[in-house]
Length: 499
Image 1 (cartoon, one colour):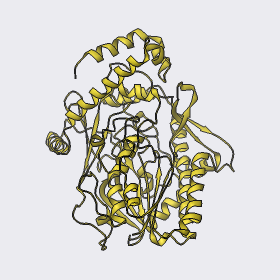
Image 2 (spheres, one colour; image 1 turned 60 degrees about the vertical axis):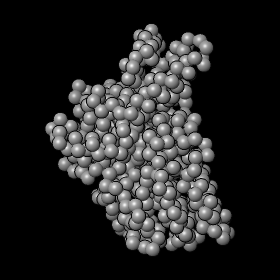
Image 3 (cartoon, one colour; image 1 turned 30 degrees about the vertical axis):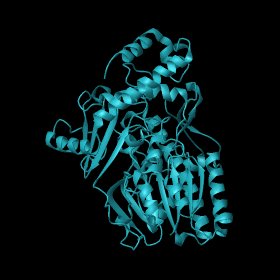
Image 4 (cartoon, one colour; image 1 turned 90 degrees about the vertical axis):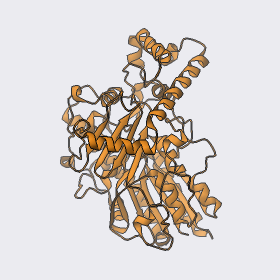
């Protein structure tokens, strides 16, 4: 049984870890893991938002099975995680930093935004994204909390792990490169400030930062338009604003890479590296102004494609794996590394058979050639289901017919600018049938719709006064206060309508 270390980011675009010749930012420790381990080229989140994604990763179960509908409703406390399984089998376990896989971590504003996403109105839910500098050319530690947690993890490796007689499992969860809160937005703010220091920005090749192609607003898919509007991105942005946001985001990725470096150096210094499986991943990506959006909550590659690097005993260096995998695979993979039998009732599969043919690899359940991601939270006005198979990405919404689907050929159109849904009906039909064989998505959408109405209704009743007094002060307060009556009427007709 080997030691395991999981180093998890928040908001890191997976494509940054492997694109050949991607010189936009120097990530020396990601490069170290590319050289001495395996890089998965097609790894995906199971839900492009913090808590539901982590719920899937820690439980090994798809989002619709744990009913992790939004950033507030995730795993119940005490739900068995992969770390619990390792602890039960004699591992010494330690967690630092952001975990976020149980319920109740997010603001009232987030909850109300998620519950009312089916209401026929448009309200800005986020701050307009901005780039901001802090400190000077010697300011290395911008995200203080992440550095403190990294220091704690390093100290634990050097002082505690070296005295252990049993194998260990260490988890470090970081906030970066998630954008920072934007105080001007109201209650609990939105995270729309891309903040870094000149020290990190110098590591970004500004001339290599690409300006993404935007479709005209009138050509956008209705769900994309809703997302762009609620994220405060439909107004005009100059090329410099877009480029600066992207450059600052890459600089934030540079800072997080340095934290990975601290962990790797501690493992090298203590002699643990040769007996430890190190896994580097993220809960979701960051659009950084692709498709006229920032943040995540989208099935586009920038948001749903995550990094997945693994190095350790018996893993061939410089391995690149193009098979699809997703974060539900972390649970069975951790058990497989530890030599623990993998339960049958989980959604994920061990990735070890893709990596090596060693004695530990379990071949009973080979990974299927598809991955599933789903999203039911705020900033998107219909439940979304993404199936990635071969070159195709199929995205179905809601009940499967009231909102039109999207289909992208990622090999011919990596920027996902051409929706082929109406042009390739046979492929669309095949992929929809495949998706329905995995989950009855119209039923799941109905379940979420019902849950949202119940939650909103009980919240509204619990206030005991006109709910507009509270709602008008949430993050969307500017829009709401202009026409409260209009929005209240829209909510009432939603509560009284069917689905």
